[in-house]
Image (cartoon, rainbow, N blue to C red; front, side, top):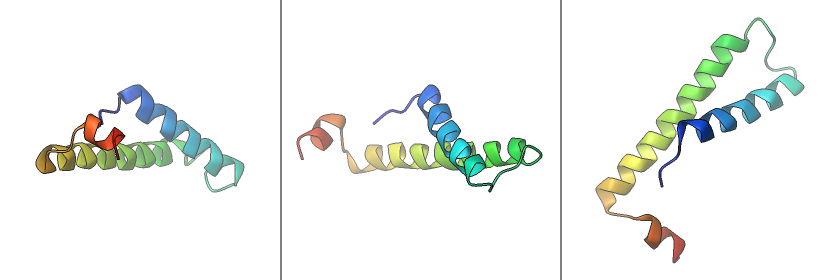
Amino acid sequence: MAVSEDTILKITKEIVVKFIEMGRISPTSFPDSFQTIYSAIKNTVERSNLLSVITGETDEEEGSQ
């Protein structure tokens, strides 16, 4: 399944907002934290897409299960 950059940014934003609400991220650590979370999500999505290509899975197959 292809995930757009916009979707990755929205997911990252939601996670960062939750961490800010919980007090785990402060304004001074925001830039580094946002970049770290964004990179982790993007890498996960890219690995998932690569795995789908390698195993031959398609969006149609995933939807029929």
